[in-house]
Length: 311
Image (cartoon, rainbow, N blue to C red; front, side):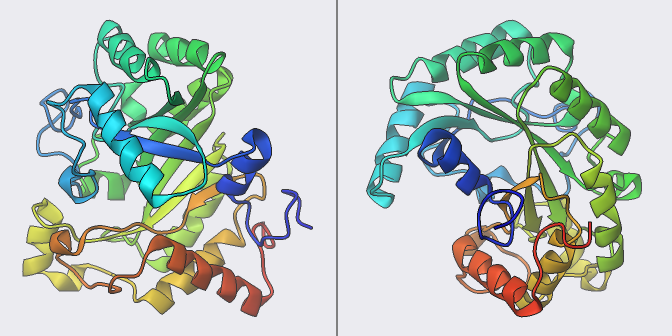
């Protein structure tokens, strides 16, 4: 038995949710029509160089549809796909979902929470789109609802953040996470492995910076070259600038990273998927995230290692 209370070789966010709530927390994606500060001119234009929201936004998530209808359609899909009953959270996923005046955020969040089958929110945003007032409001919501605040960090290296047009620094990430932690908000982060200019050694060096952050959970994704993005244009002209992992290389990298990751940090996922029609780079075929997870767990067993073994 490991410090997180299960025999699995990593601290699974899903397992911890089942222990805490008796069920998985299933996210129902919603597109509330927000933008991003590096996309609408607040700090810049063009958005992150890797980002095309159409590549991961479910087909029912259209900002011109009422939130209640998006939730109805998403719930119908999920109930057909997953037979076991779950606790459903509205996932404000597309773009930056705290990038609006507070009265508008209250209205949007309120519409989602008014749905009779929704028990809380997962709010995807950026470290530079929060302040004390917004976080105070989210903290108040968390006293009554299940609330997860999810920051896109992507990298801890300022050179990389500038390279991909994020428009914020690692110091901004630290500040935003500390502000959320001080208010008791359950906070997660998203990190991309394989961003331009980063070697496997650099990615492993970032683990200590991640360990020092007041995070509850984390998602890791491999870099995917998504059609319709500046990164796809650059890749078409200069593929030599990119270090894209084969499946076997990625599994090895993740295992090496996880054994340096502090045991208390819950891991929500190890990889991502983009629909094949959006993929402009090398592909692992139609491998699903659960299949990648099984490969990672098998490799951890082969290597006799577990999360935090080298922490």
